[in-house]
Amino acid sequence: MKQALFILIFQLGLSSLHAQEITLSVSNYDSIATTIRDSTSSYYYPKLFSRLLQYDTTLNVEEYKMLYFGYTFQPEYEPYWRSPYEDKLAKYYQMTTLNEQDQDSLAFYALQSISINPFDLRQLNSLAYVYHLKGDEETAYKISHRFQRIIAAIISTGDGQTCQSAFHVISTGHEYVILNLFQFQFVSQLLTTDFCDLLRVKKDQRGIDGIYFNIKRIWDINAANTKIMNK
Image 1 (tube, rainbow, N blue to C red):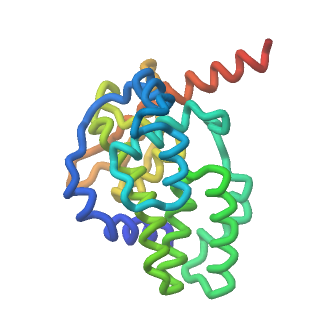
Image 2: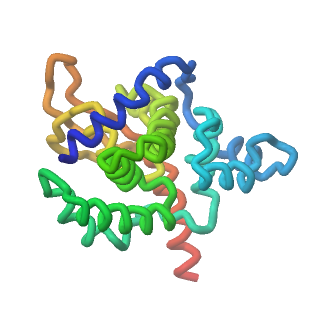
């Protein structure tokens, strides 16, 4: 069910992602911090975040880049966040089909998780799928739009072929979402000295055997939090 979930939601927005011009560039976090704190900027974080919570489908990829990477400057950001509902949700991921009660329970816990972390890709994916099953395509589209734009924000930061051109992520869990989304089979993981996660994948007809993810921002925030706690 999980793999079908990713394929379904990605296909719903594939054409719109390709229609946009996505710039491949390394995230400049100092610049992002300055921009989202400027109340005169169109990227002022409180305003953007309010639109995000309303599932505003007019938010573009650049705005999502500010939202996604700008989230690391918010007090609620946790570098190694884990959903408190993960154990409750786990059983639904193993099911091949979901009856109405299962759908309602999955939607409830997914919504709770997303209310804590609006960038919880796994639960956004699951929630959009549930609304699709329920026949509520309007709501499914709004949720999948957020999912798609977060993915677009991530893949706009590089090509994943080297550590220098790695995809930037603010959660290591998002690395595996990317793998599943593009149907790669995970083999192993290696942390490089340049703060990149190299996820080895089974080589297929695309000739790709590994994807790099830059996690330096995660390490920096975690180190800063640890330093504060140890004072």
